[in-house]
Length: 339
Ligand code: NAD
Ligand code: TDX
Image (cartoon, rainbow, N blue to C red; front, top):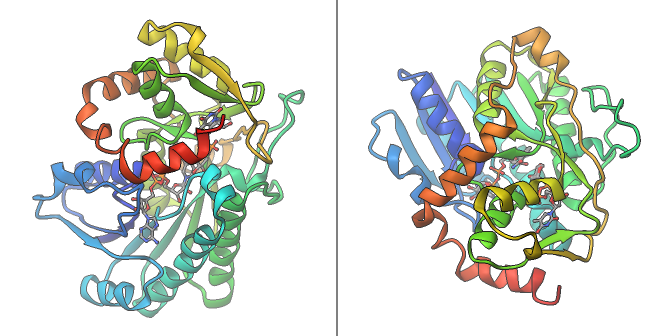
């Protein structure tokens, strides 16, 4: 089985590459990644010499490069993780989100049609459903919740989702789609809430909490997400959407306080800053469908996962230290310089 994994040098994609090489030692995994600021080749170092692994640096929007790779590898399955993924960046510069997340998806699907790929899987997000009110804890996102986006990021992901379902209906492309809640774990890029707070707390720097800090996210350990995708590409029904989440809702401020407690740092580091524009209030996934149809359940409890994650960042400074320089530093200054 040949599987092309796009965005495999990023957070979830790299964890998926590791998972697949371990769970299916007879599969060949080909990672296609542009290595944007969020892609890190050092992450994939442990598998670079694996004969069942190949890395190719290319842009999913580059038709020629994508066509060449599909012609060479004749993939059975394509799993598309490649995306611009940070909401705050999409507010600063929406254009690249439309290019990568929508045009890139269409380029991959055109190649999948041309080369008779047996399954095209699109990795999407719960953000396409918009948000839920804080005072209605009885409400959850199901696969039938209407698309109702808030940010340029979520709109670009929703655009891609609609295109994926249209390619299935119009051309009969055998697609599946997963919409996952917030992931956390190793190799999470330090612009996102959990790694950002861990690293800044370690440096005794202020921790920028947006708005009142009461926004709720539904956290899932990244390995559990990878297992869900593995199940969907093998046993999921073509044309279907699967929500992936762990019933693990937490307010941002509680996560920040938990990190400070684990690191033995003072809550005085917490600084409330200007809220994110259009900030979604609450995400909460109903994972009944993937549980009933495919037998998936999250295995890592948040209390254990967050401790493992903090320990990983403490043990792997050599991974994140080079990242928090250069381009990222410029971005950071722009975002937080006046906050
Ligand atoms: P990430 O930003 O950490 O990694 C994205 C990867 O895609 C990087 O390696 C980057 O180099 C690559 N990439 C970007 N543009 C590319 C292009 N044009 N061509 C080829 N490669 C390109 O993202 P992530 O957090 O790992 O998210 C992966 C996917 O999962 C995304 O599609 C995202 O929308 C989705 N998702 C993420 C979360 C989350 O909590 N992180 C939750 C739900 C869904
Ligand atoms: O400095 C910060 N302060 C803060 O309060 C940052 C970076 C974030 N936040 C808040 C905003 C959110 O309510 O923390 C929450 C989580 O923020 P992010 O880590 O940026 O994630 P989010 O916006 O929820 O989106 C994530 O989950 C869904 C991923 O980045 C997306 O790619 C995924 O689709």
